[in-house]
Length: 138
Image (tube, rainbow, N blue to C red; front, side, top):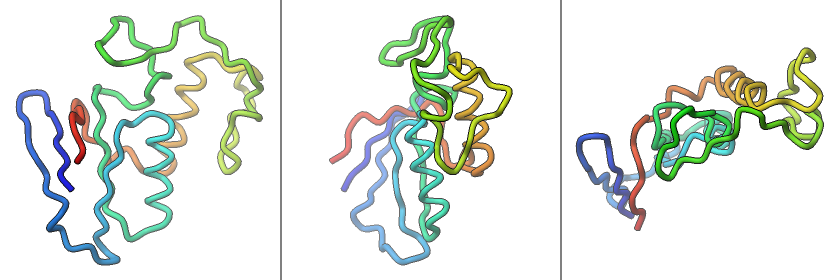
């Protein structure tokens, strides 16, 4: 398997075919550091025995919930007025309840804060390589 990743000023290929997998070095690529990318990193961290790396196209994690003043090509963003259409309890992870002081129907900045609090508490931000776009996986 070949993973081709574009980095701001250069392109490189990381060969995963000849990588010998043992219980202590299972190399896993997670593409994008949105909510589910961060959850995936946390699951890999919890399971142990993995060497995850997450490739994030932008300079910040959080995916769609990371509001951006200026639009970026190929990068989604919520509107500053976005309010989620379900209760915070219904949309929360079962192992990570939202803050009591958050609105019941959280605004985009509260959801982003929730996502970042989760990622920070799980210690997974260290696995992210920023400004790296995955162009092809084969």
